Image (cartoon, rainbow, N blue to C red):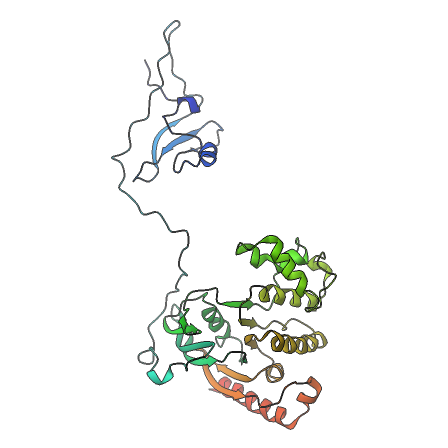
Length: 373
């Protein structure tokens, strides 16, 4: 008699071995049927024991039927052999994987660990000490040390490629630095996201979702109460100039409204530290000026700490308490300038003042020096 190959039928499978669909329904881990060819009936039976990975047991097809003579009693289905001896235990991967670390090269200038005098003063909202981030043989940021006080608006200006976005990704916890630390309110958050709200230049609104559903997407991902999230968002729509547009799709909104919606999405996460990476860079001059004034009022009202990236020196002076100039690569701090222009500020008055002109000249000279260095 020919060797019997079991057909794909739950009744013929070993006890506890079920199809992939049934396994998912019954919550049985590691028992599944996997197709092995284009034929709908061609499958492989897999079995996972307590301490063994999936191992192939037997393969069969609908056409591989046992042959028996007429009147011969049907043989009982053969059970697959045991696989307890086939494989050693393997670790199960963690669900929450750590933030991946890029391949970094060693520091080029001595020990990258910041000196004691570089340590941040107590009470700083954000402290960056001796930060270095590299990718392979390329060092994007090297030996950066600065701090941001609570409620401060600090802008970072510099040419493209000087490491501003790499710095932001490290501050946000999206990149783990090779050397140095990022501290938020005294806690080391290097490589650990979640302590800051991060808004990019593009709004990244989902075109198939209405505005209200777009702005609460972060809260939905965090598992917040759906009804409470939407009530919280509706209450802030007037302050963000979006009242009456909660059911509009992104394609029905102006560029400025999209940016306000993106900022509302960031603010709804209720983080005291906001990282804004050129949020107005893609807007026209008139809309950008309106949003700059609106952002100043909003930050004063909400008492947020803001780290702001821009290529626009005038924008940096108008918005900021301090402006930090980055040159590179590798990215490093060339100068930090305090903006001693009193608040509240009105754009027309600020940009026509003598002090504004002096600050602008200094910042442009710093950037130019980096270009010729």
